Amino acid sequence: MIKADTIFKENIRKILDEGAWSEKARPKYKDGKTANSKYITGSFAEYDLSKGEFPITTLRPIPIKSAIKEVFWIYQDQTNDLEVLNEKYGVKYWNDWEVDNSGTIGERYGAIVKKHDMINKILKQLADNPWNRRNVLSLWDYEAFDQSGGLLPCAFQTMFDVRRVGETIYLDATLTQRSNDMLVAHHINAMQYVALQMMIAKHFGWQVGKFFYFVNNLHIYDNQFEQAKELLNRQGSDIKPRLVLNVPDKTNFFDIKPEDFELVNYHPTQPQLKFDLAI
Image: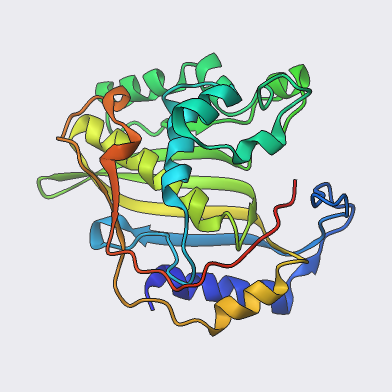
């Protein structure tokens, strides 16, 4: 098995065997029932992208194309407008989190990026001094949360660091997530932020280095236990999948497009499993 599959199975076993039960759970299933879960606190993983270690499981297919489009919606378009996500990218799963028929997800995600001009600021910081230690993107904005309803950001903080090894400059990234649905969203979120890391690295002509992934509350919902057991029985592929960004070095961040990404050597185990989302 590849590294991501080994980590995936270890987390599933730990949650099922050692996890605590949620109390006063906020999420609901679409039938209105409370979405309880078992969870562990403090999950950490490290992947060396430069060595072909990518955080994507082959134990089931991961819909990476729509996930990457969501990154563009947040960090290029910098909007919370669902029409942009629906019409420009054909991605509709965020519609379940629309706030008060506003056509938006509230003052969240892309709206916060735009409010603080985050991408331009971080690109300037990296251009002025690549080795500075202040390259932080934080979507946690209490003032914005007070302005509207909406799902609070799950993957809420990303940090970037530059390393020189010989003549090669690498961009490392750390993703911090407050809460994560292990079976549905874990590898989706990780690969989204690897894509963002690759976009910033390409902007400067650097190589991608390491990706560090910390999840505070990693959980499996109570209607997913059978799927979890099925995943534990699968072997996955021994071939390492890779995400490739097919643009020249020093392509401007805002000129990169979703179709420039290609997932190669990806041979996930079939069939796909069905999951009912908790809203």
